[in-house]
Amino acid sequence: MDCQPHCGACCIAQSISSPIPLMPNGKPAGVSCVHLLADQRCALFGHAERPKVCADFKPEPAMCGHGRIHALHYLTELEYLTQPTNKAL
Image 1: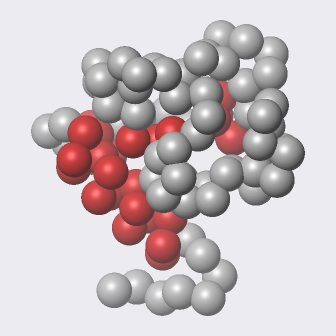
Image 2: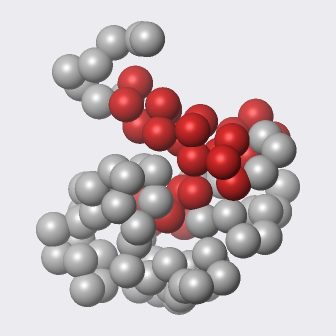
């Protein structure tokens, strides 16, 4: 599955714990990555500097649903549920 145009949800909702260019402390969940372009595409896509966690993250129908809002909600919940201190809602 290809990413939905003008989405960028994965570049906002998920956290990145490793250093990335221009974000040496990684990226907290819910914060837009500095590499997210105005058209909601990643400026590092296809480049060696793109973090492994981002390159390994693949879109899928359940996650992307019917658009950006669905994806943001889905990924925000997934981020919350995968934190060691949180339990299922």
